[in-house]
Length: 146
Image (cartoon, rainbow, N blue to C red; front, side, top):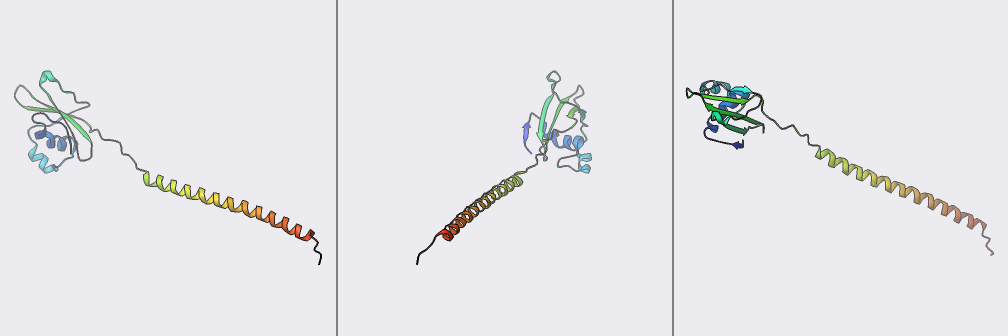
């Protein structure tokens, strides 16, 4: 997992935000229920830190290479409040066709080469037959005196 931003206590809340909001991360459901009791993240569509409220923005990539973002702040009672992005931002899956493309190009080159060789063979055979027929005709027309 790589870290995008980290201010103050971001790492302290990361695993609990992961398990409570997204049901991912290193904590299973039992560990999440016992270790993450200080707060419950409030899901929001888009996370924006309000600096007037002294909110700290935290963003991480998880094991699926999905980005999750949350802000934390302390209210007037000094209670931790966390607003987490409702959905993680995951990259679209890229389907790799490289082996198929490479094999297709190789097959196309081989087939085109074989087609050219067959065409060359056909043309030389036709030419040779014409020459041989011409030779036979001239041989028949020749009169040898013995």
